[in-house]
Image (cartoon, rainbow, N blue to C red; front, side):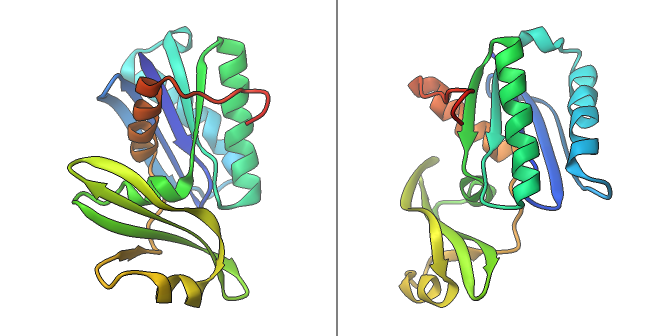
Length: 186
């Protein structure tokens, strides 16, 4: 199955194209213009680079935040439109989970995004034997409270940006489980 994944929740635009677990093409860059101007051309370039026609896309996976409100609207709307018009499956993945999945080794990871006023959007994930588990669901917390609650060995990820390859990895697990999102309600 061809999987198209992307995230625009930060100042970076990340996109990837997979055929099952095999990465066909990927892109990540800081966006000088708005995500609205950059996303569609980047997706078109990925498809062209891999020689994949849009009709072959079987699933669209998108980072659903937390993050930039405008960036999230652009990505989620684009994903919903692609899913609806191409009649593909749709999977929304937490951008915090995508941040954690960039870690390459087993352990616990706390992904934090600044929410201003001493608050963070945070979640805690564990990677063990190449499998991921959510230990604390995403939520809005006082930064100090999150840091106090973590185990000593938990690695804090604050400067990491969501990566479309990590979104694809998470989406592939959801696809195997048959867990998809409704394009009308995501």
